[in-house]
Length: 110
Image (tube, rainbow, N blue to C red; front, side):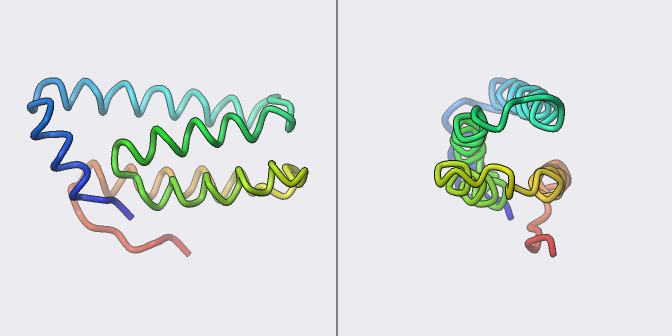
């Protein structure tokens, strides 16, 4: 799910050119962080990584992905980082990214 209101606010605030730059940086950074999480990131660093991803996602309107990050962050904060479903987290990001890039409102992934 995308917060299209937030997207419109950012586009209006920064203009189309700068907005596109922001989107490109966001996508690159999130994808790098997700790749790192799927690799060998220690689970003790998971809470901070998910917190950062959540904030970035909220800033750009990736509400569904941000909610998934929040859930994982909460688990990690409770010492249950091993219960964070990184595959579902990545799938949520992919789903939001696809909806964002096509400009279509999206239903939450299953």
